Length: 473
Ligand SMILES: *Cc1c(COP(=O)(O)O)cnc(C)c1O
Image (tube, rainbow, N blue to C red):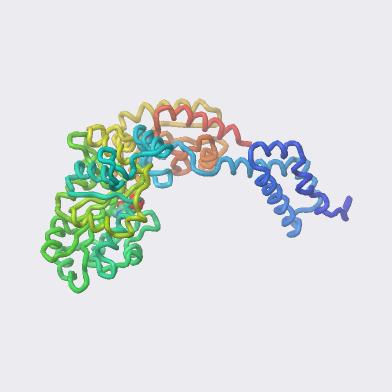
């Protein structure tokens, strides 16, 4: 018992004293003075709480100060502050439409158009040939009509917004029929029954989870039923003894009974006139075919299989589309100029036969023969790093974002182990790297899928691994 009376609180520097320490003061060049003060206060308060709880004594405080723990803690907060927010990452998970990583990366020309629209003025709501005011999505509607064969179109913020607008326009205060097999939940918070309630329509469920027939819709289509809604089970499949009603049959029934019909497609696979085909690969319905089935409205996402910026695309019969446009809610859900610029460019790529260049489509189309040499090269470079073992192996990738859930794309991946780190720790260090790297973990191995790597990212990836294992200790 050396100096049992030393008060540990007394050993703590004041905030002013801490800020005057050279290495802490140096952090002032990286964040504002106010934030730095806050970070120092936070650390000292945490230490005080530990003293109060009896977890830290005078000796402990002395040791921490001698070790430079105060500086390290402040430094870590500064690092976190500077590394927070949206930043580019390397997607080595192979999930092409990864919602957590921003879904579809847009084409460079679309990105350039978005940057131009963002940084200057543009013809958002004016026709430069007549000088008159027009609708901001007039051109988008024109492109969508050409691409899908629909009579008209409008575009809103995302597909969830399109569904809300649809339900509210045609069935507010009334009922909407949906099959029990199609009451989807997308991405955690978009649950069809909840969305319907908020949009002001009552849900009438028909059929069973695995079988719904047209007679079920007919029998339920009475009273205040206003809308027959079909929902693509984009992120799951019911297999086995199943039966669902075709869009064309629903459209016929709707016309016979004078009810509006809609198909919420979600993923929304578009194909150009004579471009390459993804439909057979992904087993997804084509927007054009669903429009041709005769339903009044078809809704789908801009940033799923289409490969554009986040948006909700609505196409269909002109009177139905016009009713949606006249709904005051449309004003609250409409697109901004940046998204319009990116979406116009993306749709133009489809119309000029260049859809294979859309990055997400190109990634989905990559064959395992194309990916194998990349995986093998990557495995060799990683295996050359001290403390790492890596091997290339055949595997499967998933399209992602609730698109084509039963489809697995044959691929080649690299399986990586670090000798002194478990897979979780290695993954965490890679996420903290610059740029951050996201990979899959399978059976305590890190799995890198080159399907989602852009040209030039291989070298960056290897450098990130080098720094991740070097920082161990
Ligand atoms: C993805 C999806 C939605 C939601 O679309 P967002 O663009 O994410 O808003 C709605 N319905 C279906 C069927 C979907 O697949």
